Length: 315
Image: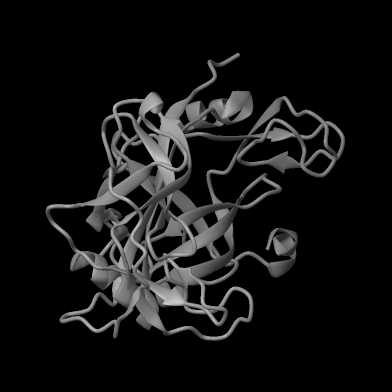
């Protein structure tokens, strides 16, 4: 039995979004060391502000400025900060109701330990030295001895020079993936430039990549079957947007390929043919890069196209 593999993996997607007038004013205000909220139909001041009343769904735009000081409403201690968190030393996650606001803002509190944090404690904003128009312009909150500010929030136009109109929100997941016995064997076979699947003992279908169980019958699979290396394009798409850190020029074709002998199509890139000539039924073969542990792409074999009836169940 082959050793079961494992590897650290990262899924990362930087999401870019545009801002409406309310969110634009809020983030631009942070850049200018100004905290803005929005007043709802019943007079509640929401911080952070939203564009629509959560009760009536009416559009909101009555911006007001609140104080940079506030009160902790609840908290949780974080003893082990992770990558890209606001502070690299232990801190408290806190909900802070800023003076003049009716709701609480989530951020972090710089405190020497959990014994120094309590619900009801007074805090104030510590501004970042360099501000760009993001929630991180608030570096953190810090303890503050002052009393709550009774002043009514002042109206604000929300107008600033060079307003922030969009943000990039990086989403990232770090995890360790263990493919299991079946997929470990599949990966090890790829190192030998072979493709193996597993046959279901009940329906006799061969699944590639193998999953260790038949998705149709629900029974365990163990019998290895070598398939391919040639196959048939069952369906495909043309990619026109270049992916970050992927050195492939657009447009290119990504396809589902039914390898000969397999009852499940896998996916792969098609090259060696103009993108607008790729078609269903195209016969292809794998191309391996020097020293690579997987197929780089598939190219046409020059054979006649496969008849639709031979792969229609795999589309």
